Image 1 (tube, rainbow, N blue to C red):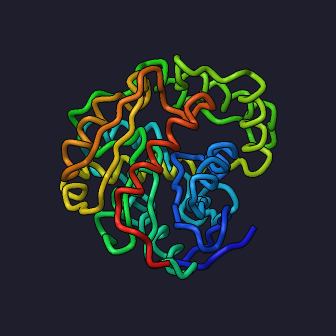
Image 2: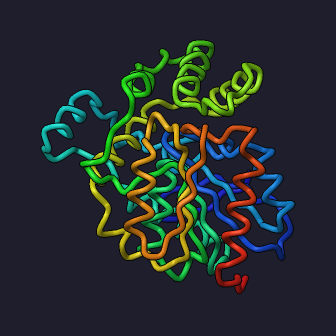
Image 3: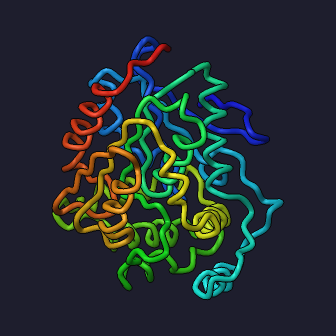
Length: 300
């Protein structure tokens, strides 16, 4: 796949759809590679008339791994976060938003519809706030403003997320851990088959398995803190999508996000957890496409 150089790093990306179609940038979440946007979901977006751009965030997939920044002590940083001490963060959500802005610049795209999921929603929010001219519309899925008073994950979801990674070279162990996380945070109303989960996790691990990057991204989220003042600056037409049954980022976070972004539309989906299940692909594409149609057209 092609790459671009921006913001001092290399980003691996892929473009799907016709060159003259409306650009739509997909930004994935914590520790997830671009292939976390399911093939079927992307194909439906292409069929809806979009030129779909997905990429690996820094520290994940085939983009630059920031080894020189070291591996954070996650338990220690978690304690510091809980007692409101400053965190030692290798980078912040703002840096990742600049990565996304730089990718669009390097591709010669002056403006795109932007869709972010989970941490990717945070990145997309900051991109829209700091680079409003680049964002034709914003769709924030299962994400948050980072407000400290919001409810946190269920104990089951937190345990799954904080389970230590498999040892280096233990491919089967890494696949099993990833599957356990998806099982813990997935959609109770749209449960994926074992075969689907096995395939997704195996493709992720075999393409790139890099736990230190996920740890640095996790600290970036925590260190970025409450971003409410930032999201209030968003001027792009915004759709906030959240699962009513999300155990990792409870629906209160989506409600809060929609309340803080001026004129945002909130879409709460019954039975949806913290994933993009096959059974919801068409619903999500319909919501996104309908939202984009109401937004300013692209000049690309």
